[in-house]
Image (cartoon, one colour):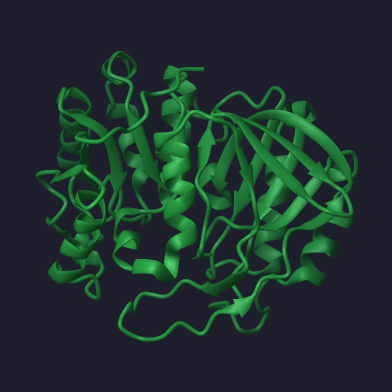
Length: 333
């Protein structure tokens, strides 16, 4: 495990777009970009942009070469201490064969993002041992106090070395992108213990369907003594989540997994015929998979495609307790 140096006042953050770029979010204006930057500058940090984050092509992204160049430039620049991805998307795994992993390992820095960034974060940990972070994408720092839970947990992960006692958010809402309108938050009922038990291990995971893209490649991290963190967005539904989870559990290494944490699911679904993944369907999916019966499982955790989310270290260490009260403590990050 290689933990990157923590951020401190005066450090530079570089915005990169290893998946989709800023213009693919037409609702994310220049004014919102400046608001997000101000969040960091108000805290004594500086922010710069990767050269190609404002490019766009037919896929809502830019070329593999441009995205790799921006990532390599950020890792090479001695002033840059953290890389935060502007957003997720669909094609981050295209970069993996073209990255200079020796460069990345010799210049360990914080990398943060989620969703499609799952491919990049897990691949870098697999190839270098560098701990990466599944947490807010840069555009989410434009939303002010509505996402205070995000920011508090992000800074605990990237600016402090002490263990983090994770706590459930008090309220939540589906992914929402207009900071000018009031958010209709709903009460969070907390984390669910689907299977009881205690476990400690290395965190691997993020977005489930993206993590599955790494199966059978050199970019899939070892899951020996792992705690799998998985989630998915409103494009999935109970049947596809069940299938993707089954694919994960059928891997020959799955017997080495020590526990599982499932992120909070969205309450809406693109496929209205099957509906979203709710508490009832999630319990049923876990109950009918015999590969999961021995695992402690916590669900409805605060990460994924709802607001707010906590930041967790891919490659870090977590202790989980699934019981009458579910709890998680990140030990190394």
